[in-house]
Image 1 (tube, helix red, strand yellow):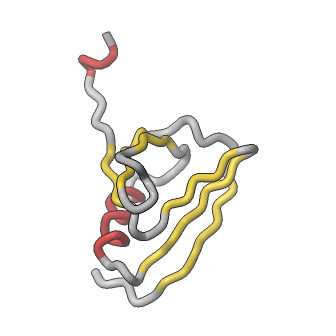
Image 2: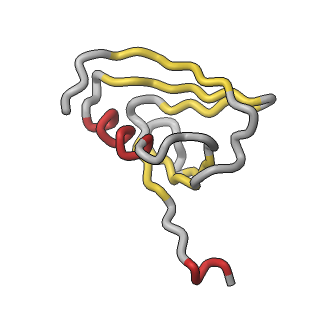
Image 3: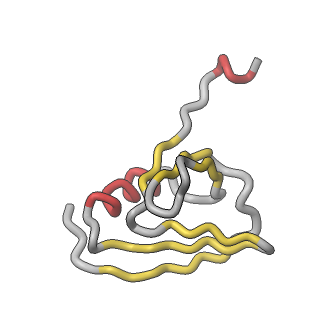
Length: 89
């Protein structure tokens, strides 16, 4: 699917330290960084890959919490961290 727009979305959240862990890479990130953003629907990160692949069009998103801001420019690539039963001890 080809996106035919570009815009910036601002999202206010209560906690940016829970949720599925994601590894981010791209311009402005030294190597990679792991983040968690709660309450995102299951399909968000697969749609984010579509967004990344449609550069220069697409969406930039900023998530805001009490003293934290996480910016996801459309040039940011994401990878979900897989968890397994073995990780739980």
